Length: 242
Image (cartoon, rainbow, N blue to C red; front, top):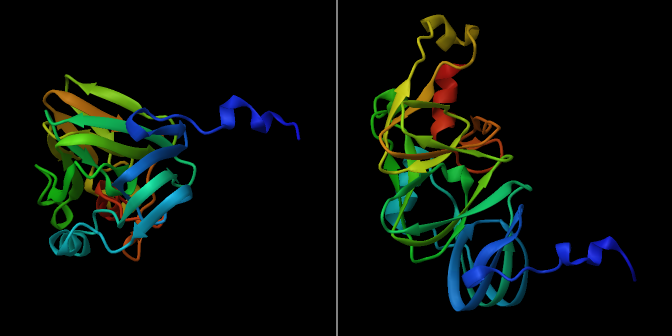
C-alpha cells in the first residue's frame, strides 16, 4: 500500500522525556510504570497497558472549589506502561515546562495534561475579586511539564508595559503578574449589551508574559462552556459584558 499518509511526517514521534508533541494538534506521553494527569475524555489513542482512573480529580477540596467557582478541569489519572495520545477538538497543543521559579495561571478550559510532579489549585485572580462575585483560574506551581491548548496560533506578549487582553481570549499568564479588570472607558450602556461588546479586559502589569489565542472561548451555558469544559475568566464577565 502506498500513500503520502505513510510518510515520516505522520508516523509516531519520539517525544523528549516521554512528554511532548506528536504534532501541533496532539500530545504524546510515554509511560513506563508512571502516571500523567489529563483532561477527562482527551485520550484519542493508546498502545500498551494503560489504565484510566476517572475518579482522581485532585481531592475533595478541589472538587468543592470547582463546584463553587465553575473553574477547574475534570481530570483522569493515566497509569501503566505504553504510549497515550491526547487532543482536544483539534486545538493547537503547546508544552510548557515549569522549573519552579514562577507559577503559571491557566484558564481551566485550556488545560490538556500535566505531569504529576506539578502542584495545582483553583485560586481567585488577584485584583478582580469584586467583579461578578470573584474570578478564578487554575494555578500550577513546582517543576514539571504541562500541555495547554489554544484555538489557533497564539501570541505570547511580554509584559513590560500595561497590557490588556480580552477576557475570552486570554489563555495563561505568569503568576507573578499583577492582574485587574479594565473597563476601557466604556459607558454603562455597553454593559447592557448595546455597546461594542468589549466592555471588560484583563489588565496585566509587572514583569512576565501573557498567552493570547486568536479566538474567544464560548460563554458558559448551564454551567459549562460551549466546548463542554469549565471555563474561567471570560465566562463570568461575558454575562456582564453582553
